[in-house]
Image 1 (spheres, rainbow, N blue to C red):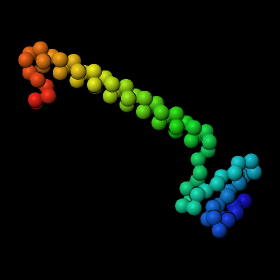
Image 2 (image 1 turned 45 degrees about the horizontal axis):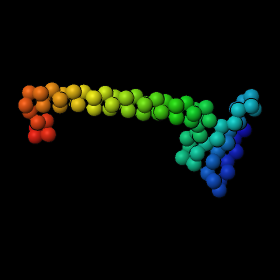
Image 3 (image 1 turned 90 degrees about the horizontal axis):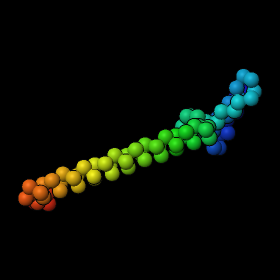
Length: 79
């Protein structure tokens, strides 16, 4: 069964079994489920944590290299 709300531009489609209802955005793409939104959020949070960890490691390496340059009489701020 298809039904269109012309005012909002949304299309509702009920699966053959009648149990699943799919709601479409005005641009024709389906809305994602809560589970998918939650999964995407969790993945984004993991990527952010990984990026933060890599940035911290890079800062630590930069500090070690800067100290090594200073021990050789080179001011890293002047490079």
